[in-house]
Amino acid sequence: MLLLAASILVGSPASQQRVTAAAILADLRQRHATSVVSSLLESPDAWNTVMKGVASADPDWFKVAHGLASGADAGAGVDLEMAVSEALLVAPERTLREFGYAMACSRLGFDDLELLTRAKVAELVEKRAVALSRMPASLLPNVKKQCLAQLRQQQEGRQYAH
Image (cartoon, rainbow, N blue to C red):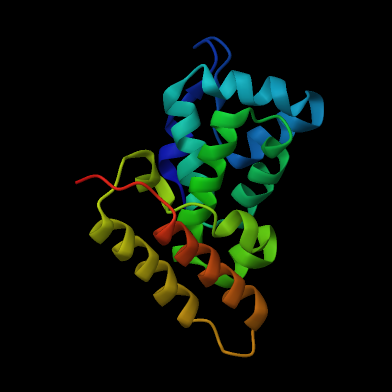
């Protein structure tokens, strides 16, 4: 699915460790999550590959997100939340089941890095509402409702660019 991931290397070129979900999961079995996160953050390309992987809603990348979460500092934690929020657009049911509404609906995706206009925030919230509406009504109805409420709260409680 993510051919890009196979072409990016972590660490020194000599290590030739590819940034794939499988490689990161293997690394997490050998080292503490904090060390793995630090290694990935040393290479912006590697960290971006992880973020794109998580945002793809691929189950293996979701395992990576769970594994890295305990080793993530505040900045890396926000990055993971933004990637999970992007995954909500791709596979809302899987994302909500894996992460719950608190994490899946806490950010407005990668756009949340910038000071946004009121119109842009409304657009991002609406995209997530549409994704949630694609789920059958009987699936996770309370979680969907809580997710939408959390997204709307973000809309009301933020500072906007002019």
